[in-house]
Image (cartoon, rainbow, N blue to C red):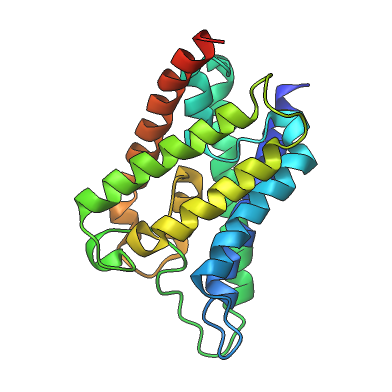
Amino acid sequence: MSLVKKMGAEFFGTFWLVLGGCGAAVLAAGFPEMGIGFIGVSFAFGLTVLTMAYAVGHISGGHFNPAVSFGLWSAGKFETKELLPYIAAQVIGGVAGAAVLYLIASGQAGFVAGGFASNGFAELSPGKYSLASVVITEVVMTFMFLFIILGATNKNAPAGFAGIAIGLGLTLIHLISIPVSNTSVNPARSTAAALFADTAALGQLWVFWVAPIVGAVIAGVVWKFFESEE
Protein backbone atom coordinates (compact mmCIF):
# COMPACT_ATOMS: atom_id res chain seq x y z
CA MET A 1 0.00 0.00 0.00
CA SER A 2 1.37 3.44 -0.91
CA LEU A 3 2.31 5.91 1.81
CA VAL A 4 -0.21 8.43 0.44
CA LYS A 5 -3.05 5.93 0.89
CA LYS A 6 -1.82 5.08 4.37
CA MET A 7 -1.72 8.76 5.29
CA GLY A 8 -5.23 9.19 3.92
CA ALA A 9 -6.47 6.34 6.09
CA GLU A 10 -4.79 7.87 9.14
CA PHE A 11 -6.33 11.26 8.31
CA PHE A 12 -9.88 9.89 8.13
CA GLY A 13 -9.43 7.61 11.12
CA THR A 14 -8.24 10.46 13.34
CA PHE A 15 -10.85 12.81 11.86
CA TRP A 16 -13.58 10.37 12.94
CA LEU A 17 -12.01 9.80 16.36
CA VAL A 18 -12.07 13.53 17.16
CA LEU A 19 -15.42 14.27 15.56
CA GLY A 20 -17.06 11.23 17.15
CA GLY A 21 -15.39 11.22 20.55
CA CYS A 22 -15.08 14.95 21.20
CA GLY A 23 -18.39 15.47 19.40
CA ALA A 24 -20.12 13.22 21.92
CA ALA A 25 -18.59 15.26 24.74
CA VAL A 26 -19.37 18.68 23.26
CA LEU A 27 -22.78 18.02 21.71
CA ALA A 28 -24.36 15.23 23.72
CA ALA A 29 -22.74 14.70 27.13
CA GLY A 30 -24.55 17.51 28.92
CA PHE A 31 -27.69 17.77 26.83
CA PRO A 32 -30.61 18.55 29.19
CA GLU A 33 -32.49 15.41 30.33
CA MET A 34 -30.90 13.25 27.61
CA GLY A 35 -27.19 13.77 28.17
CA ILE A 36 -25.09 10.66 27.63
CA GLY A 37 -22.65 11.60 30.40
CA PHE A 38 -19.04 10.52 30.66
CA ILE A 39 -20.00 6.86 30.24
CA GLY A 40 -21.49 7.65 26.85
CA VAL A 41 -18.45 9.70 25.88
CA SER A 42 -16.20 6.79 26.87
CA PHE A 43 -18.08 4.46 24.56
CA ALA A 44 -18.08 7.08 21.79
CA PHE A 45 -14.27 7.21 21.76
CA GLY A 46 -14.06 3.43 21.83
CA LEU A 47 -16.53 3.09 18.99
CA THR A 48 -14.66 5.53 16.76
CA VAL A 49 -11.52 3.40 17.00
CA LEU A 50 -13.43 0.13 16.66
CA THR A 51 -15.27 1.26 13.53
CA MET A 52 -12.23 2.78 11.84
CA ALA A 53 -10.05 -0.20 12.73
CA TYR A 54 -12.30 -2.31 10.52
CA ALA A 55 -12.89 0.42 7.92
CA VAL A 56 -9.30 1.45 7.17
CA GLY A 57 -7.10 -0.55 9.52
CA HIS A 58 -6.17 -2.88 6.67
CA ILE A 59 -4.78 0.12 4.79
CA SER A 60 -2.63 1.89 7.37
CA GLY A 61 -2.63 -0.38 10.41
CA GLY A 62 -5.17 1.86 12.14
CA HIS A 63 -2.98 3.99 14.40
CA PHE A 64 -5.02 7.24 14.48
CA ASN A 65 -2.73 8.44 17.26
CA PRO A 66 0.91 9.64 17.33
CA ALA A 67 1.49 7.75 20.58
CA VAL A 68 0.38 4.50 18.94
CA SER A 69 2.77 5.12 16.05
CA PHE A 70 5.63 5.73 18.49
CA GLY A 71 4.71 2.64 20.50
CA LEU A 72 4.62 0.38 17.47
CA TRP A 73 7.90 1.90 16.32
CA SER A 74 9.56 1.20 19.68
CA ALA A 75 8.30 -2.40 19.47
CA GLY A 76 9.95 -2.77 16.07
CA LYS A 77 6.64 -3.01 14.21
CA PHE A 78 6.65 0.31 12.37
CA GLU A 79 9.19 1.85 10.03
CA THR A 80 11.02 5.01 11.09
CA LYS A 81 10.59 6.58 7.66
CA GLU A 82 6.79 6.54 8.01
CA LEU A 83 6.66 7.93 11.55
CA LEU A 84 6.56 11.66 10.75
CA PRO A 85 4.17 11.32 7.76
CA TYR A 86 1.76 9.32 9.92
CA ILE A 87 1.90 11.87 12.74
CA ALA A 88 1.31 14.74 10.30
CA ALA A 89 -1.73 12.99 8.83
CA GLN A 90 -3.09 12.23 12.30
CA VAL A 91 -2.74 15.80 13.56
CA ILE A 92 -4.24 17.30 10.41
CA GLY A 93 -7.11 14.80 10.49
CA GLY A 94 -7.76 15.55 14.14
CA VAL A 95 -7.79 19.30 13.59
CA ALA A 96 -10.15 18.86 10.64
CA GLY A 97 -12.48 16.82 12.84
CA ALA A 98 -12.40 19.49 15.55
CA ALA A 99 -13.06 22.21 12.96
CA VAL A 100 -16.16 20.42 11.69
CA LEU A 101 -17.31 19.92 15.28
CA TYR A 102 -16.79 23.61 16.01
CA LEU A 103 -18.84 24.59 12.96
CA ILE A 104 -21.68 22.38 14.15
CA ALA A 105 -21.51 23.38 17.81
CA SER A 106 -21.26 27.11 17.12
CA GLY A 107 -24.62 26.99 15.36
CA GLN A 108 -26.38 26.68 18.71
CA ALA A 109 -27.78 29.86 20.26
CA GLY A 110 -25.57 31.10 23.08
CA PHE A 111 -22.71 28.76 22.17
CA VAL A 112 -19.54 29.10 24.24
CA ALA A 113 -16.54 26.95 23.32
CA GLY A 114 -15.33 26.59 26.89
CA GLY A 115 -13.08 23.58 27.30
CA PHE A 116 -14.27 22.03 24.01
CA ALA A 117 -13.41 18.53 25.28
CA SER A 118 -9.76 19.53 25.74
CA ASN A 119 -7.38 17.96 28.25
CA GLY A 120 -5.75 19.58 31.24
CA PHE A 121 -4.48 19.48 34.81
CA ALA A 122 -5.20 21.55 37.91
CA GLU A 123 -8.02 23.96 37.07
CA LEU A 124 -8.42 22.41 33.61
CA SER A 125 -8.80 18.89 34.98
CA PRO A 126 -12.46 17.80 35.31
CA GLY A 127 -11.73 16.65 38.88
CA LYS A 128 -9.07 19.31 39.54
CA TYR A 129 -6.27 16.74 39.67
CA SER A 130 -2.63 17.81 39.94
CA LEU A 131 -0.03 17.76 37.20
CA ALA A 132 1.60 14.71 38.81
CA SER A 133 -1.70 12.79 38.86
CA VAL A 134 -2.37 13.64 35.22
CA VAL A 135 1.13 12.65 34.07
CA ILE A 136 0.95 9.30 35.89
CA THR A 137 -2.52 8.66 34.49
CA GLU A 138 -1.58 9.47 30.91
CA VAL A 139 1.65 7.45 31.00
CA VAL A 140 0.01 4.38 32.54
CA MET A 141 -3.17 4.50 30.45
CA THR A 142 -1.25 4.90 27.21
CA PHE A 143 1.09 2.09 28.25
CA MET A 144 -1.92 -0.19 28.76
CA PHE A 145 -3.51 0.94 25.49
CA LEU A 146 -0.38 0.00 23.54
CA PHE A 147 -0.06 -3.24 25.47
CA ILE A 148 -3.59 -4.13 24.40
CA ILE A 149 -2.87 -3.16 20.78
CA LEU A 150 0.35 -5.15 20.60
CA GLY A 151 -1.23 -8.20 22.19
CA ALA A 152 -4.47 -8.11 20.20
CA THR A 153 -2.63 -7.75 16.88
CA ASN A 154 -0.04 -10.43 17.64
CA LYS A 155 0.06 -13.31 15.16
CA ASN A 156 -0.95 -15.74 17.91
CA ALA A 157 -4.01 -13.75 19.01
CA PRO A 158 -7.49 -14.79 17.79
CA ALA A 159 -7.84 -13.49 14.23
CA GLY A 160 -10.36 -10.79 13.41
CA PHE A 161 -11.03 -9.58 16.95
CA ALA A 162 -8.28 -6.99 17.42
CA GLY A 163 -10.52 -4.02 16.63
CA ILE A 164 -13.01 -5.07 19.30
CA ALA A 165 -10.37 -5.49 21.99
CA ILE A 166 -8.72 -2.18 21.11
CA GLY A 167 -12.01 -0.27 20.95
CA LEU A 168 -13.22 -1.66 24.28
CA GLY A 169 -9.78 -1.04 25.77
CA LEU A 170 -10.02 2.63 24.85
CA THR A 171 -13.53 2.75 26.30
CA LEU A 172 -12.26 1.37 29.61
CA ILE A 173 -9.38 3.84 29.64
CA HIS A 174 -11.86 6.71 29.28
CA LEU A 175 -14.08 5.32 32.03
CA ILE A 176 -11.09 5.39 34.35
CA SER A 177 -9.40 8.65 33.41
CA ILE A 178 -11.95 11.19 32.18
CA PRO A 179 -12.25 12.65 35.71
CA VAL A 180 -8.47 13.05 35.94
CA SER A 181 -7.29 14.45 32.59
CA ASN A 182 -10.40 14.28 30.42
CA THR A 183 -8.45 11.39 28.83
CA SER A 184 -5.96 12.07 26.10
CA VAL A 185 -3.70 9.05 25.45
CA ASN A 186 -3.58 10.68 22.00
CA PRO A 187 -1.57 13.83 21.22
CA ALA A 188 -3.47 14.46 17.96
CA ARG A 189 -6.83 14.42 19.77
CA SER A 190 -5.47 16.77 22.46
CA THR A 191 -4.01 19.19 19.92
CA ALA A 192 -7.23 19.33 17.93
CA ALA A 193 -9.41 20.12 20.93
CA ALA A 194 -6.96 22.62 22.47
CA LEU A 195 -6.89 24.71 19.29
CA PHE A 196 -10.62 25.44 19.63
CA ALA A 197 -10.93 25.61 23.43
CA ASP A 198 -11.56 28.93 25.12
CA THR A 199 -9.22 28.08 27.98
CA ALA A 200 -5.48 27.79 28.66
CA ALA A 201 -5.47 24.27 27.18
CA LEU A 202 -2.79 25.13 24.62
CA GLY A 203 -0.39 26.07 27.40
CA GLN A 204 -0.80 22.61 28.93
CA LEU A 205 -0.70 20.71 25.63
CA TRP A 206 2.93 19.66 26.08
CA VAL A 207 1.86 17.25 28.82
CA PHE A 208 -0.44 15.45 26.41
CA TRP A 209 2.32 14.95 23.92
CA VAL A 210 5.08 13.92 26.31
CA ALA A 211 3.19 11.63 28.70
CA PRO A 212 1.34 9.51 26.10
CA ILE A 213 4.44 9.07 23.95
CA VAL A 214 6.54 8.06 26.97
CA GLY A 215 3.91 5.51 28.02
CA ALA A 216 3.64 4.13 24.50
CA VAL A 217 7.38 3.79 23.98
CA ILE A 218 7.78 1.97 27.31
CA ALA A 219 4.99 -0.40 26.30
CA GLY A 220 6.74 -1.17 23.01
CA VAL A 221 9.97 -1.98 24.80
CA VAL A 222 8.22 -4.15 27.39
CA TRP A 223 6.28 -6.01 24.70
CA LYS A 224 9.53 -7.06 23.07
CA PHE A 225 10.25 -9.13 26.18
CA PHE A 226 6.97 -11.02 25.92
CA GLU A 227 7.33 -11.51 22.19
CA SER A 228 10.82 -12.88 22.61
CA GLU A 229 9.45 -15.63 24.83
CA GLU A 230 7.07 -16.91 22.13
